[in-house]
Image 1 (tube, one colour):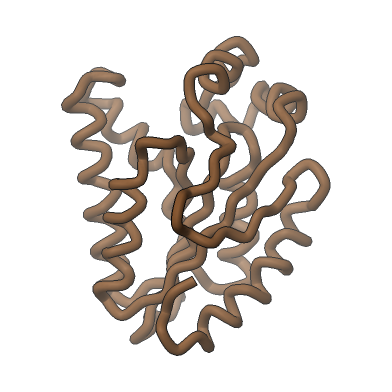
Image 2: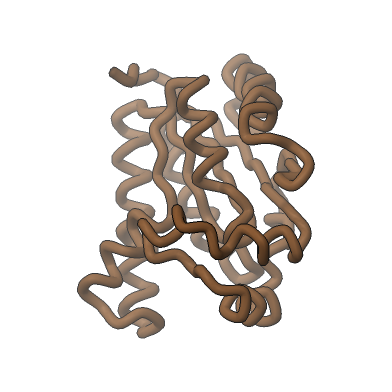
Length: 190
């Protein structure tokens, strides 16, 4: 059973598709007793009802994600939240962070990166089919051309992990040190 905390912690884990966000999120959750809200849990649910890409799709997806994060924060739940960030997504980031900070929580940003060739190698992995993720190099390349998914979130200090050079277990251990420091931080900000 996951324990609720008076001062909940949020790990905002972001990076390009196929970089290993869900794998790392699960590794962190196993070591630190966090829950995981990965981007495709909500994406897939909204896509069952609304056409992907329509303005109502993106508005609803954003609302569902923020509502879930807000509820988790109010319940004192430590959460790893995965997201594919690109410039223009700052309002969503602000809403998610605000949910935890408003509940007296602390937030840490982790950027996961890997070279495009490594992403292309990983994108066809069968495990990606479970959540209807991008599974072909051409779609990945289009996304990489259209959006800067390697961008750091402006104004937010991030721990950056090279997923091509670091195993999920080692990355989770490295991040664990930062999580422990976050828990001791008086003002709850990263």
